[in-house]
Length: 175
Image (spheres, rainbow, N blue to C red):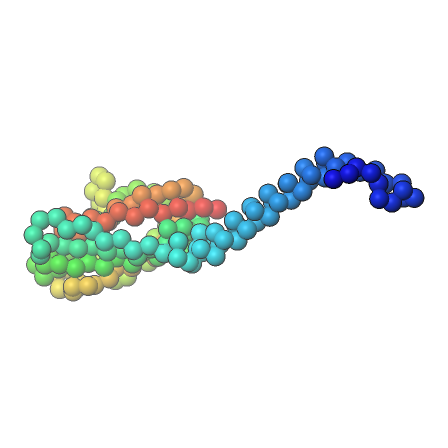
């Protein structure tokens, strides 16, 4: 590329080095913009394939042991309503009271709006909160839905347990 002025009658100053730097910054800006749009389409900032998660507990012991599954959003905003749908299956549903154990630290960073169906009683432990349902209230495949709002930003690892079986979920809350 020649640094000669193609229009000698015009008094133009060219700084080709500065212009090339500006073009690089411009291209970098376009790349960042496309990455942000791609992440938004994939679901990082709302509903989408990257955001939706489904986890299933690993069975321990015999085939009749309890199974816990959870559907939730991996990415959520602080102060925005979100939901965890937990499904319980297995023999323990037929043999008396059913309790879903929720790690107590979940309540440290969330404001619970509603639990459906409502538990008959709540038992507080040192590290867990047990949502106890009377015998016969929950059937195989029953779902418990926790509607809540995260109150603090950060990456959370939460565990839900049922009759010796547990499921772990990871969720990022951002501003």
